[in-house]
Image (cartoon, rainbow, N blue to C red; front, side, top):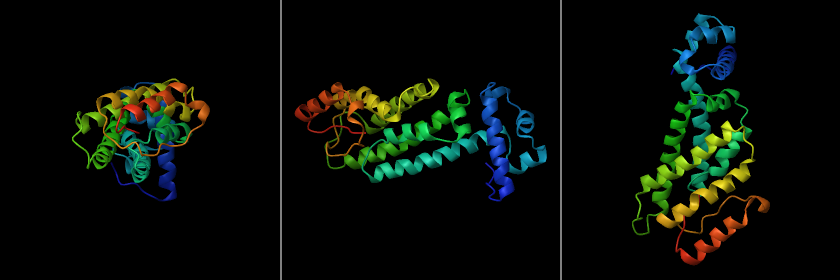
Length: 228
């Protein structure tokens, strides 16, 4: 990627190109988009475009990198709070995002690059957090990289469906659903982490009786559980 310029004119160019790209990926497959299409939609010249980007892949990568930087900050904050996976934060980030190119990209075929990058970023954050929390415990029955891939994949699969369905449920309800779907399997096959980790607060009406029953079972039958 070319180094980002910070002057006002360049920032305006970035906004125009990103918006044009977002519109185009919603209209046609990524492979069919030409640089000329971006120029026409953004109403900028070829010289201006190449002063800021190498090619259309550079446009795609710049959008992905911006969102990954925001996500990385959220992951770091979650780790500082001793939470393994910031599932609620991720749902809220997408729900409240005003970055239209990012949201359009998530719904397009070109978004596969974004989903792969998100999977990698989440796994890189989850595994060290698991390792830290398991440092003083016996070796877990399932390797931590496997648990990390499972948690990240389960969350992103649910997130992707939610985005493609135009986000029919609020972030808090989606986080509660993720807890109910993902955690029982982790508890059963990889009981390894301290139950003392705090979970984010949410409305009591969004946490179903089945979730409460799961927690009651985990306290009585498991010496330790995974809380994400």
